[in-house]
Length: 300
Image (cartoon, rainbow, N blue to C red; front, side, top):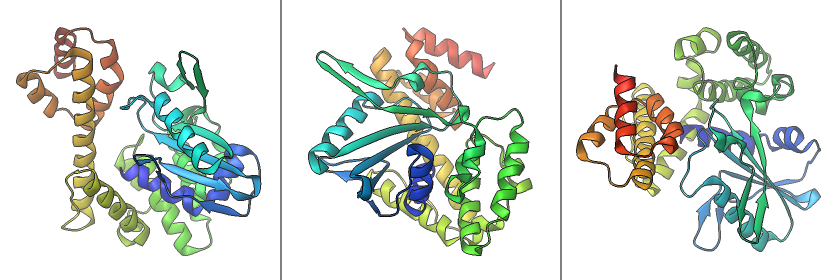
């Protein structure tokens, strides 16, 4: 959830950077649309309206390809609702943030009898970082881009952040960079190049966390952040793990049927990274034995 709100903040604060990068066009009169769509409201991660071009840019950021309902169906649903409401050209782009070998990150359409719907896919780890390093709003995403030397790339991003002249902007971009870099880098390495103090001092960080808490309350997710930022970060990580656990259990139940209490207890002990890995491989499971073998492998 922290990642979602970080990216939502970046898109809303720097829409020109995203439009220039994704659509190769300039736009100055941009309206940020509400993310809730009519007809039994659902939420899209970020919807940006290019008023001058009479076009909607709909961005979906995904850390994992697995979702319920499946992502291709969601993209069709979003498109229909947006088109019904605004009746204009809609460009949909799904940006996958975390490297994975799952075939789902190559799926760029929904197909059913008499219906096909296409959208664009960007796997950020395959993108050249150079174009992302040119704009402040894209610097946090640059940490996730293609590189043969991740540490050098992180250092390069940190240098670009340090060159931002306006102090409040520099601090905000530093916070967003640290949050997104956490998807692929260890905290110790991030702290070598970016100021940890920015996290503690930044009002933007507090706003991002507060937005996440508000969304969590709406979705019935247990909240934290009651005894300072450090405790809040730990609670936020645990919330992410619990959210991932619930998703994995739902997917396993769909795949294998009900999961017995013993297996559920073992799943409860998995880390966030292990749960994310399980989310990628569970589609290959045919029986509970496959799940048990996988658990035994990671525990050995």
